[in-house]
Amino acid sequence: MTHRRTLLAAAAGALVAATTRAQQPATLDAVMAALAARRQGRARFTETKEFPELSMPLPSSGTLSWSAPDRLEKHTTEPLEEILRVEGDRLVFARPAQNLRRELGLDDQPELRPLVESVRATLAGDLAVLRKHYEVRFAAQPDGGWRIELTPRSMRVYAALQSVAIGGRGDAVLSVVTRGNQGETRMTITPEP
Image (cartoon, rainbow, N blue to C red; front, side, top):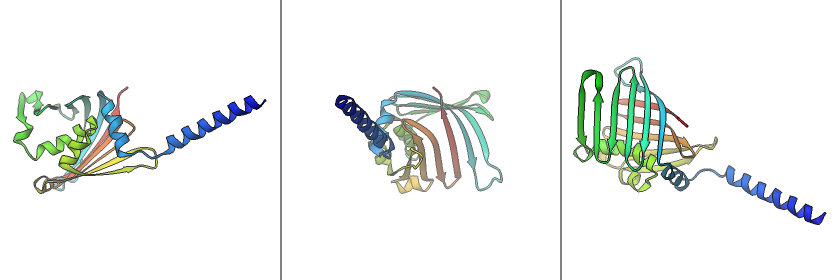
């Protein structure tokens, strides 16, 4: 009987400890480690862009793909096909229906690199790169999720991009909101299994 009570007490203690760990809020280091451990992913996205000069937001949708260490692709399928691919220090933008393709180096576009790295470095769990370009603030959410707020360090970048807010849960990025002098873009992300 004593052995049985000892086993039950140990099991109850383990359950309480596991429940306590599960309820602890996420930390920036834990989220970055979880993201770094995920080496690839695919997702669907919907996006709305709001510009001050337009009365209605512009919606779009498509797919996202990530492959560590540095390949990120946004393939917009609606309302028109666009492909934005970043691999290493190269960015490719294409509109196949118009036979348009542009390729450039991120080092040639100092304002563009921080925007790319806001998403790519987050997916890679690379806090050092995020901190190179941004002031980083982190908040655990009451629902178990997390939110990373990025403010550009460079005044030159800040003139065009005031903030990037990235939300997620565990090792999944679920939303990206960018705010700049040209308006606001809200992306909702649904990871694929």
